[in-house]
Length: 94
Image (cartoon, rainbow, N blue to C red; front, side, top):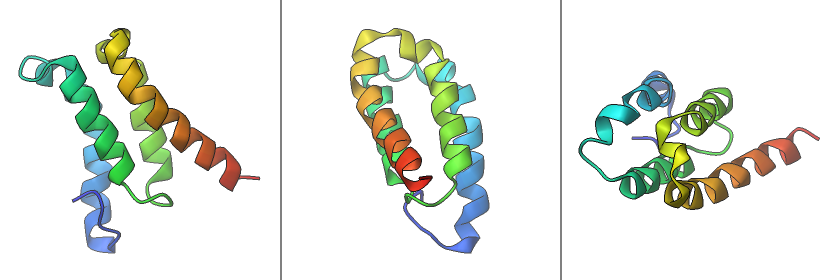
């Protein structure tokens, strides 16, 4: 769902990015933190580069401030993805 770049999926993708971080504590009862970090990294990577940029960065901010990011193993999974997206964003805003 997140890889599509049609107008009809924009609202749903934005809602997913907006509300997913608030579910992290509940999802951690089902998945271990490393599995969840991998799934979140894939989700962030799947969103097309020039789509929902602001919401994507707000989601990243929420993930960084979540309990998930306190785990070293999770940071090892998430930080490369986050830094890549921030770098692309900064380079595109020259």
